[in-house]
Length: 137
Image 1 (cartoon, one colour):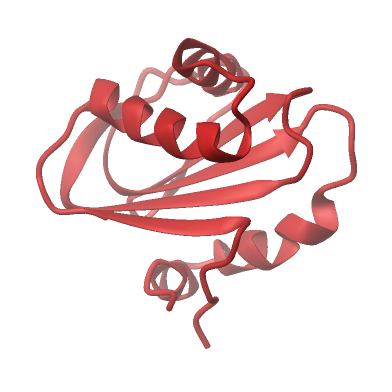
Image 2 (cartoon, rainbow, N blue to C red):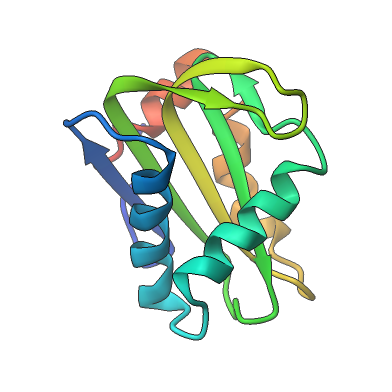
C-alpha cells in the first residue's frame, strides 16, 4: 500500500527536463518551508558534503541524498520523481548514472530520527517497493 503524503513526506513530480542546478533549487525551496534558517546555498553545501562521504546512488535510477543540519528539528523526506532521467555524476565515485528518482532525507545533526525514517528506508530495499513509494497518494 502506498504511503500517504504528510507534513514530513512530500512528493514532487517533474515533467520537464532539468539539471542539477534546478534540482537543488527545487530541493532548497521545499526544505526551506520546514527549515527556514537554511539558505539555498547551505542546503546544497550540506547535501554535497554528505555526497562526498559515500555513494548515494542506490540503483534502479534512485539517488539517496542526505541533508544533515542542526537547523533541522524534525526529520523530513522529500521525494522527487522526474519523467525524464537526468545524468547524475556521483561525487564519491565519479561514475555517471541515469536517475529519475531522488530521495532527500532532512535529518537533525543531533537526534534520533531512525524510527521516523524506517518506513521510507524499508521501501528502498528493492525496485518494486521503491517504485511504489514514488506513487504515494
